[in-house]
Length: 55
Image (tube, rainbow, N blue to C red; front, top):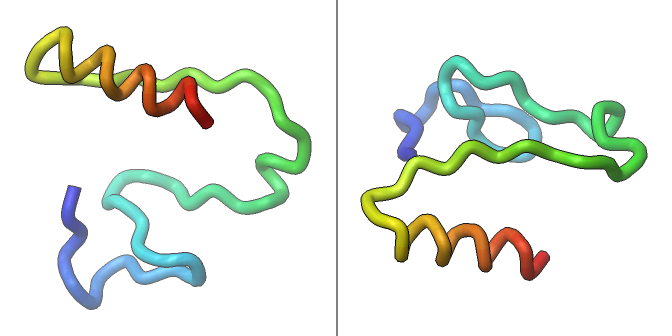
């Protein structure tokens, strides 16, 4: 998603409108995360899943 130039600039880059920036205080300890992916087809969804699983 592209964020309009000059708007919503934060210390570590731009924040998508409607989203709250993540600070290190929120992720001081690792834990589970939920990611909702909307994709055009299953192949794309599985490619995103594989990319995220590789991290």
